[in-house]
Image (cartoon, rainbow, N blue to C red; front, side, top):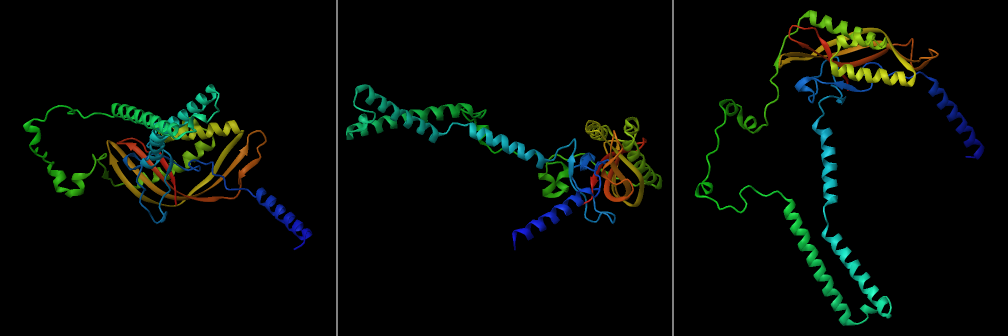
Length: 332
């Protein structure tokens, strides 16, 4: 293929790429569009149950007040690696001793006027030098071992004589009747989390969920902080407020309109510690666009073309109180 043909093909690709950049991209700045946020009580780390609306389940949270063990593990591993790197190394100490010995022998040769390596010219000099290295290495090894032992925690009974009672086998504490009835798995499990009990919802609850879907999107679109505070938890308001503040700094505003619930069903509903929770799978359509504040020009999304979204919304209420949005997770 000639260079002229390659150049022509390259210009065609560039034109197509530029045309694709002009096509409006579906905006993801709507509430929860940047990833799963919020908490689901004691079930935050557990994936919500799949439903007909969301057969593939839910994506995990990206921002939550309850970090998962998987998120904490890398930090713990990095700390352990840093601690290991900070520990004194025997090989490193020996290499430092070897270098110091060579440097000392060379300096002695220079001062005596015989040359830098004259101190190692004879067999006796080499043997003596090796003996010095062995002595230095032994002293360093003993010092490292001594300080390492001092830094390790000692047992409470270290150095104390064992009594006759301590040598006798101790009786094992009896397990509660409930743990024994639960089998070996229940007896060996960690302390139980908050007790949850399934609850039944009524038609009014589902009407409230659909109403909140529209009202929360409208309040977010209008940057209505008061309206958001009344309909979401403090944690969710913090996430929304961060996103709206970032939009102000960027000089854009996110508009959401024509929110319509297309399909929805209950994933799970439960009560724990005086609060009722309900996770609902919803598929809905909306028009979402990001506008430039100064000119009103659309910079992302579309002002006319609706898009469909499938998400899990979790609501929470104190018994007898109104429902509030507690979490949003995208469907997988």
